[in-house]
Length: 117
Length: 111
Image (cartoon, rainbow over all chains, first blue to last red; front, side, top):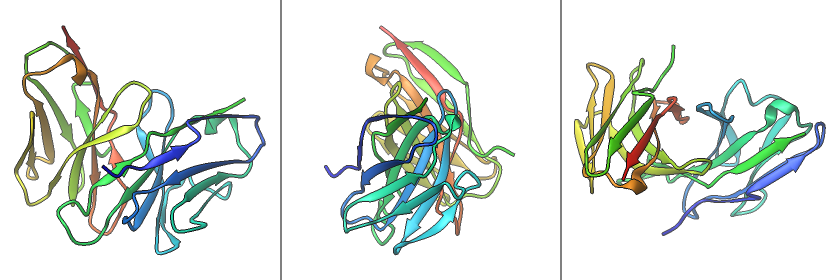
């Protein structure tokens, strides 16, 4: 069964460093998302991406964050200068978004645990 | 206001019993989805129910939606130890793509 994959599973970085989190969404999906979950807290929306542009973003998604779909399969989240409070689990999700019974279902990857020291 | 709040926050039952978790939300929704998360792991999609649906089944899962009360319930029948996890509801609204998650219910199935 197709699934969303994410790499790496765990990333440790120093404060101020840039990190790139990678995701491969399900191949025929059109909508892509990043969410994060700080330890012990609820999952929070960061950004949605459709047709090669950001369609919606949250207040968390400030100028330090960017997303890109560099080719036909990868979807990346870049944090330019990491802060301690960026430590969280980051989830990528994708949605088909067109016709069909499951077009609204968002499927999540296994997550990347980011630790900022 | 918080969208998608689950209760109880924690539930512990014996294997074989049924587990019921509830979710309430504040604004009108398009869809409501339930997810499972094992400790420190990813979110597994369980079921989606549309705003014009009242009940949906998938295996041992039964989801209801009451839009007049802005609430949903997830019933897991004949629970198993492997059902031990956190369960989240997530809503989306017309015109917005993002999912808004609740705090989740931590379910423990005791053997």
